Length: 470
Image (cartoon, rainbow, N blue to C red):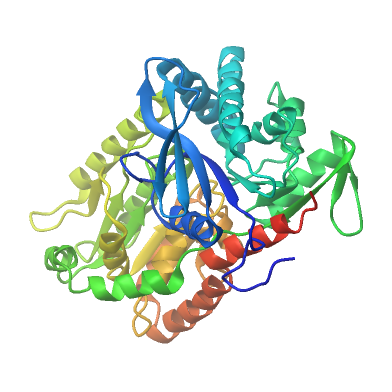
């Protein structure tokens, strides 16, 4: 097995091949940014490797040969998708079937055979691009629900390399998964991986229960699962953040123009902040209702607190996302119309993105970090909020018990995201919490963050994947 140090997380000489739905922003491609991107790129740079993914571009003709960009020892292989591929694979099956199902929203699941076919075709397309590029000793690491069948497609293409898969979302219990018409085929495909990683112990348990009960796998004493004449390993790898890096950025951001402008606009009010993609899984409507209940139930908070909700739009072509945006705009207007004064607007609702430096500065100035998803694989905003605090005068994290981060951040004020009264009471408690208690909670949570930081997540996964025999 590889060393446990930061360097050498992949056995020396073994190249890493990463496959994800989107590429990071490299050499003109449009993609994801943030901690995950930085961590994966660091792993690629250590031993060299290739990152495959969608370029973010919609092309007129099917694109089977990736566009190659090199940056040092790392190769970025970008594939374009046609409009139909994007609609069927991404907007359709991935985000109208798997996303709501994995977030326990069966009422929003819209299954169609055409979307499933498109999802499988794009996974096959990715496999056709990846397989010919593999060297004899490469490791393959596939990311997230968009690409569950990719491992099986690679096996069908004759790939015998160690292949790992990490699911960033929650994983539903068998009773919910059986709602999916093709649940057995999807789970058979998931069993083509050598190593399957989950965010929490509950997600791992749900997966294991399904494989043992529905697919009749057998679990050995070491936790491995024997199924379909092969052995797979399933483990928990909670994803983390660059704790010290974010803390440093947050401290430096106190001097930034954006932070000074924010403080000047608030003075002398205390800030409650929420930062989420505009998504129905984030519990934003209930959060707005809880804030309204706070200032309704506790009149002393009126004119004394401001709630800043940052919610950049996402998946704007999906009808459910259009609907949640309209509902939130109406709710924000209702709250401000009901409670605003000539010198105080209680709720600031922004549909725009900010870079991490700006957000870290905002987190640091906030008395409350409000993170109340209805269901979330992990939620890195909760961790970023804690890491951004001033240890001498930290804020308080109010966290949904249904976020994966709740299993690590024991000293957050945990709430049921469906209980708006409970959320309002937690916010009131956080506003009045003594300094000593805030400091103690913050110190304990920082210890947990450092134990499972982003480097540990990457290192632990790749060490296990490197240990898989050829």
